[in-house]
Image 1 (spheres, rainbow, N blue to C red):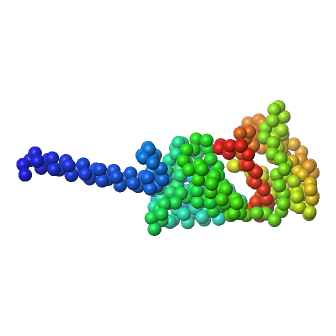
Image 2: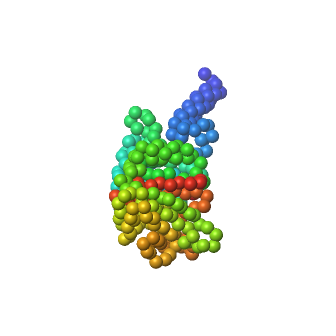
Image 3: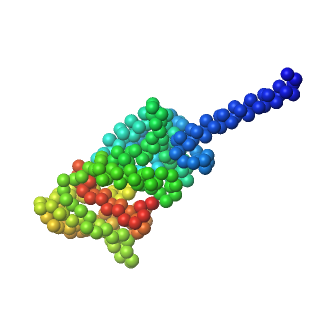
Length: 286
């Protein structure tokens, strides 16, 4: 074989190797993402896990924190938080972990915002974000900039809610949200409110109960609802009494609001963290 022929043979062999490697890489991307060929633009990174912070945050071996996209779990110390943290640890320990980037790379705290996939020992690829919601350890918390797996997240939440799974386990108390009013006109923060009504035949002590939207939470102090009675929780400031209590919500500016006009969700939990009522309206994308 002359030198020119040998050079051509080497070049052809190299091209075959490159094509084979590209095909394997493309197969890996499609397997992780479950999308079509335009997924080539998405970032796919396999990483080692150092520690789990809570049910939706963990730390890579290089110290970089990862905040899982489209979900929110109970904060540390709240009912269900330890279970969520343990569940995430189990998922991350199943096998090779892959992080998938969406439209936004990091949050204001410098944490990577990622969809998390794990491939188990049988070769099954799991969307951990979705499964944490499906198992009732987290609820949907989707930003408008998020492009991937939105329907999967909300579908998993609906399934968990209908089955009373995890955080959706029902409270024995029949306390419901009878009205939710988002910000209205010039009424200020107190023009925004939520009304709870006790549908039970016995009084309900609300101490330790919580009202939560998709990310911020209020905890009741000394308050009791008699049978058929209602209690209004205002977003703004004021003096609590038997029928009106005040969140005193302050997000760094006057007239800060909790309930979004375009859509939101309200979670009412008893002192054991069991779900008394859930109310959603409009478009829940943040």
